[in-house]
Structures are given as C-alpha cells and as structure tokens.
Amino acid sequence: MTRPAGILPHRSEQMFLTDGGLETSLIFLDGIELPHFASFTLLKTPEGRDRLKNYFRPYAQTAVDCGAGFVLESPTWRANPDWAEKLGYSASALDAANSDAIGTLRELADEYRSDASPFGISGCIGPRGDGYLAGKLTNVIDAYDYHGRQIEVFHESDADMVSAITMTNVQEAAAIALVARKIGIACVISFTVETDGRLPSGEYLGDAIDAVDAVSTNSVAYYMVNCAHPVHFSEVLKQGGAWVKRICGIRANASRMSHAELDAAEDLDIGDPQDLAMRYRQILDHMPWVRVLGGCCGTDHRHISAISGLCCGHQAAA
Figure (cartoon, helix red, strand yellow):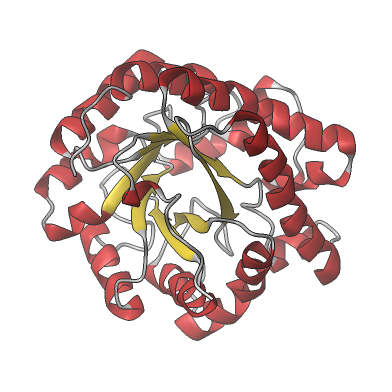
C-alpha cells in the first residue's frame, strides 16, 4: 500500500530544513570514532542513541524557531550489506539497526513537531561504494537486489520516505527509485557532483536526472544535490532545462575543495557559514521551488542557522 505523501516537502509550500554533515561533525567536532564513516554503529548503545539525538537537537530547534518543517535523515548512510560486513554486522543485525534508526528519529520528532513545524522521517540510503568515487559501476538489476532489503526495512519501520544520498551514477540511483516505487514509499535521489558539475561517473547532472526519470517513469519525489560546494554546481543549475525543476533540495559542502582534496584532508574545513548561506539564497532566487535546505561534509548547526536566517523567509514558488 502506498504511504500518504502529505508530509513530503515537495507537496508543501513550506520551507524544510535538515541537518548538516553528521559524520564529519561527530568525528571532527565531537571526537567520536566512526569506523568506515558509519554513524549507525552508535545505535548499538543507549549512550550512542542519545549522542545521535543530541546531534539533531540544535537543527530541530532552529527549524522550530523559524517556523520551518524539518527532515530527519536517518544515520544509515553506511548501513548496507557490503559496509555492514566490514563492520561485523549480520544480516539480522543490520535490519535491526536500520529499524532502530527510524524508531530513534521518530522519538525525536515527537518532541519537536507541531502544526507549524512538521517533521518527516527519511530512511537514508548510501552508495554501495565510496561516496566520493563512482567505483565499479553495477547494473540496475544488481543494484536493485542490493538495496532492496534496506528500503523494505525502512518501509516496515514507518519511515515517511527514503533518500538516496551522494549517488555517483545513474544505475544505482535508478535501481533505488525502482525498488521504492515497487514497495510504495516515496523516494528522493540526491546526486553528488565534481568541481566541473558532473557526476563522478562522468554524466551531466541533467542527463542523470532525465535518465532516472525515464527508467522509473518519474516516480522519484524530487532530486537533491549534495556533497559539493555551490561554486561547483550553481552555474550548471542556471544553464539547465526542464530537469532543474525536479531539484527541490540542496545539501552542500562547507568547503570548496574537490572530493579528492577532502578525502586527503586531515583537518576539517568549515568554510564560511555566512558566505554559504548567501549562496543558498542566490540559488533560491533562481530556483524558488527548492524546499529542503541542509548541509553535507564540514557543515554543522552554525551553517544551518545562517542558512535559515537568510532563506526561511524566502517566498517559495507554488
């Protein structure tokens, strides 16, 4: 049965915020060790679950304070089979972690949500490989089988939607969209791009969106761009055609560095929160239908606070 879609940002005239760079904040700001960049491992203990809730609280409060909605993205970017095997998780333990992630966020949403600030729960799906590299490209059928169980667990756990974050290629993104359509849960696809505005696999952003829409018969709720600084993709958005209307969310990096430079960096580059906020506002001036604003690597509550200050009062297009 298809889940009601009223909570989804693209069906609302309201602005929605989301969080920043979860893993980079936990590692560099809080000094928490995350093996293989896997924040879902914190769900194993009550202390870890509290740590995750406390990470989200400043963001949730910012949304409430400015009267925005909020998308709670589950800490499950690495909670898929290949990464779970490296972390010593069995299939049943992985299912439990994905379910627990949604339940933990549901508890948090109940503390903050109101009629003025609706909260949506999104099951986060990460790439099979590294989020900075296209890696070995898989075909749609293999990717469909690989990601299917995680999406099923999110649906069974009453997530409002699923979001595939930092997608590097069309095949994997299309497979996730097809699984979500079959199961009956709303799906968001977020592509990452290199400094030239292309996906790590080489596709143009617009071509990638058009290709996924063609394969999935336009079942994707909306698209986002993440894990790149606005200087890497804002001009591409301005040059785009009809596909640009499909982008409803931005989760940019704080740093202007390339993926390769970020991967090699030993220190966190938080960039300039006010400059990043201004660039978001400029994107909204050009794309007023964008509904979801958050951050990715290097961003934290300071960046989202600055973004909310400049953008939450922006008049969104119908």
